[in-house]
Amino acid sequence: MNLTEHYNQLYIKSSEAILAGNHHVDTQINNASDSRFGITLLIRPNDSIKASIQSILNELKAVDDTQYYYPDSDIHITVLSIISCYDGFSLNTISVQDYIEIIQRSLVGIDHIKIDFKGVTVSPSAIMIQGFPTDESLNNLRTKLRENFKASALEQSIDIRYEISTAHSTIMRFQQKFENPEKLLAVTEKFRDYNFGEFTVDKLELVYNDWYQRKENTITLCDFYLRNI
Image (cartoon, rainbow, N blue to C red; front, side):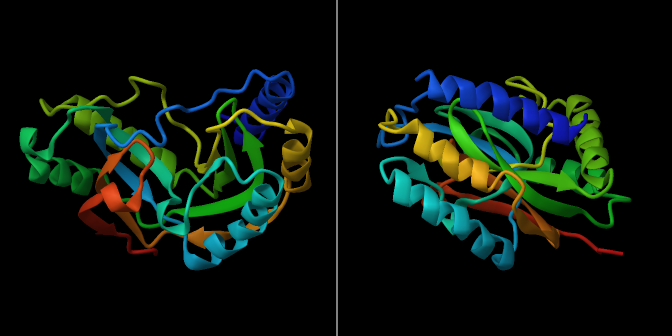
């Protein structure tokens, strides 16, 4: 996939929808009884990247502080949603160690992953930092994970919702209708090509998580450290 073209097309189509008032409002964000949970393999950007992201978050909040903004602790890149969040999922129903072993096997030969965060894009429901892997390591890992999990008898829902191929980080979700979408998009235009920085991934995390990856609802199941050769 050409990520630049993908992000560009998503931005064009979604910004048109937002201006037309056709964005998607997430009504579940503040639902205290939301019981959708799953398990995810993810990457967290380093502190330098997170500090850089604050530049756009501050401007977005100044324009519209009624939306849902991800705190530093929750910003992430999804490597693979192994069990997509659904109502009532519990760790008691799976053997976590079996999942860890498949991930460890899939990581063999993956020595380093680097991500370049440059620019922002929008979807009909969110604003995202554009992530660009600097080589094929992330794609190769995803391919191995898909093959190994689908060859197993473990519960998984990989690619059921969609096949993930990007390296973006969601930083804001729409939880209210916009009073002034033009001002919001003026901020995203300002940061369309902004260089948030490049980072080398030192570890991946397997987590039990809610739909929004909130820290208070997340349990870390295992950390996987890369050799970064």
